[in-house]
Image (tube, helix red, strand yellow):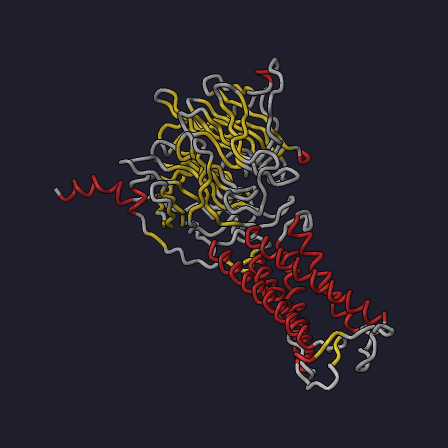
Length: 574
């Protein structure tokens, strides 16, 4: 009896288990990364469709392969490439529904970007372009901007194919939907000019992120690269967002997996009312990263749509585990998830093996969990901290001392110099961190341009201070050179501080910081503003009281009292 129970419980106890289905061979697809793969069931037969990708020479491919499965752990590859096929490409969005396999967008030869949409029919092994050639008679036919590195797909049984953000010569904000029934594109979020990198209520423009459909109307995304292409942000990032196409709204949820680019997502098969999104692979260490906790090849992330939470789980293996990889194609099957190829992140080589991760949303709960305690530091964090310290603390209060805390001695002057010089050293170091953090087009967006102006103004301040004219002796008028220098020094310092404070305020949103950072910064900024305003009016009052009574004279024969003065009369007047 005990033996029977062990047999019945064995699938549950196994949790998530890797198994090698097919290794690379002379009759299998060549090694590749950034390819597309779909799972199609027709009657009692199931197929994997593999299309295109990036070769080892970094060239786009255009071949189509079918893996005809005998069961989840065996099958045969065959090349079904025909003369009619989508142009060669990689980094496209893909998915399968109702017996068809779909692909959209991608990057081709010589950085040619696509905005087309294709359907593969497994019954005939034929490709057909939709939405363009099929509707030439439709006027004002809308097509999205060409791009690659987008996320999205189609939910099995659904008709909406999502394409989210991506990159061409700029980062895109929009979310698009292609209806496979009407063969029409629609922008459902962030139409041209409506979104920017300084609003925290939707995901900032990115590419190379992971994404999948939770149901026909909900898209979940994770991570990606937010830097370059006219934007500045984390690359990799580690934020999680869900889009509801029915309410046209985004919601951000707490994240647990290590930030990454080139990661992959797929839904585990549902069971007993449980649903889980699986996140696997990716590149976690980029030139922007200072330190990160790398995920082992045995670790996967699971997102629970019902609780909106992540958890990290250790997988098992029947014989061996797949090597750590990125840019893989993953697709949901009947009893688990299939994965093909990708980029070996340790050896720097491409892969051509087919794996099966057996398990479902219910059994996945029985795998060993790992705490979300990994550490992550990048140049953006270092840049932000240095700029807040340099401009938000040292420079602000150094200028405050020079403006409102002067004394008869020179203590204030030396303190002013120490704070300003320290602040500018932090600013220069922060500027270097900013250049290192942005992948390209460092000054192609507002935060970068303002930051450059601020750093230049900051460097000019101590330089022009060296050439300041001397102060005149007491009761002597200031020279024109002194008056001009004071204006330049005051205007340059004030402009630099105001721009710096404004740019730091923009930066807390560009950097995808958590809400607690916004609160701390803006509360501190409010304190700075209040202290300076109060000090300004207090100084004005004191100066008015200390003005020499040059326009008043004592009434003859009266005692010195504030009540015994009268306005002086001009000479010659009686």
